[in-house]
Length: 221
Image 1 (tube, rainbow, N blue to C red):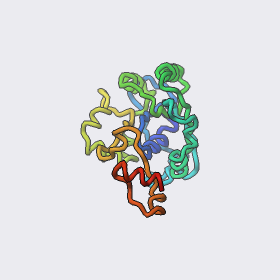
Image 2 (cartoon, rainbow, N blue to C red):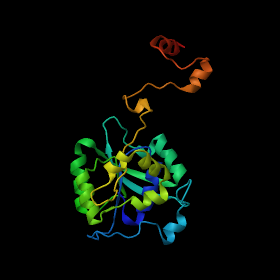
Image 3 (cartoon, helix red, strand yellow):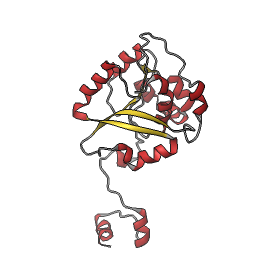
Image 4 (spheres, helix red, strand yellow):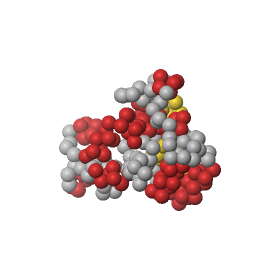
């Protein structure tokens, strides 16, 4: 989750992300219902590109509290996708990786301690915590940020009303982004897929294998 002074930056980065949970966190405990205007101001506003890439003109750094599966590597920052996102956005993320088996305990400690990361990403924050900490002002409401900086995500909410309904808490606010996969993108829905490198197919003058026999022939070549 994002600390108040950086929440708009991380929310903007969330728009770039393909999936995962990102909720804004405030560095200030206002304890009340009202929250300040989430729009950037001053130096932050001057550094922001409201549209397009990079998201910010001068690089910034953020820290994400992140759930980790046993099959994942130990350095998300070094994976190709996050390196590309960093170059595209000018936002460098350091991932505090927490194994999923310890996630609930570590997340609760982080929230109770008040020393918040800039964001919780893929951290399985339950709706009860979103409501509780949202009402306290710890999580920043994302409604206005989505309207201002997330046209693609806003379109998703309009296309899939149930998605917006599921994200909207009883107070009418949105505090998180969902994991969302297109129903047409079958590889994400059926588990670990097999991938064939197009460059190799081109060099071998072969089409993409469609049967086990064709795949076997491809492997032999």
